[in-house]
Length: 217
Ligand SMILES: C[S@@+](CC[C@H](N)C(=O)[O-])C[C@H]1O[C@@H](n2cnc3c(N)ncnc32)[C@H](O)[C@@H]1O
Image (tube, rainbow, N blue to C red; front, side, top):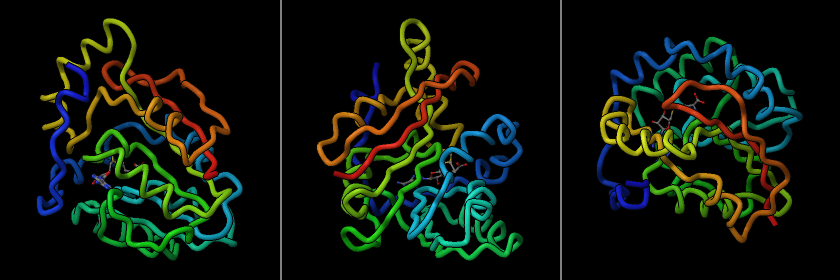
């Protein structure tokens, strides 16, 4: 069963709240594996940057190191994650405009953002098509959508992910193992592909990872 047949109708009135997942998220031994990819996302940042689904603020140190010429905004709907992200920003002295919002409905005007960052979030967003449309809406023409995501594998691994997905989704804060995220990104009319790279890390069932950059037409 692929993601299309398991997709639920998004309901904005249902709270996104995963206190246990938020509490253990930064204990998952992922930070060293992801370091170079977080650096990729934050390379040469400037202007207004919007991170969607900021989680516990894992991207903030990288964004802080990326330059001073940035106005960093982030949205995060889960209050438990948001509290952690607020602490992360405070501890670093990194100024972030952190808002409670969903990627499907961004509280920003059209063409007001230079770079949108999505790190490990399109696996979890309930309506990824709406979120991508929102990213396109808020980006200025020529602006960049940069992402790092894990996606559905090919072959038997993909079938295994389909089987595990219902259980995984419950245990991992709504994360889905079998999202077909890249076809969604590359086929969107509002974007041209700058680069997409399939990465050689991750352990089944969270594998493969893909990172890349799209440019707003
Ligand atoms: C796996 S965490 C990734 C956190 C962070 N971006 C990182 O790189 O570590 C996924 C995050 O997406 C958030 N999320 C879930 N649904 C969302 C939505 N509809 N819009 C924006 N963020 C969402 C979750 O609350 C969670 O904090």
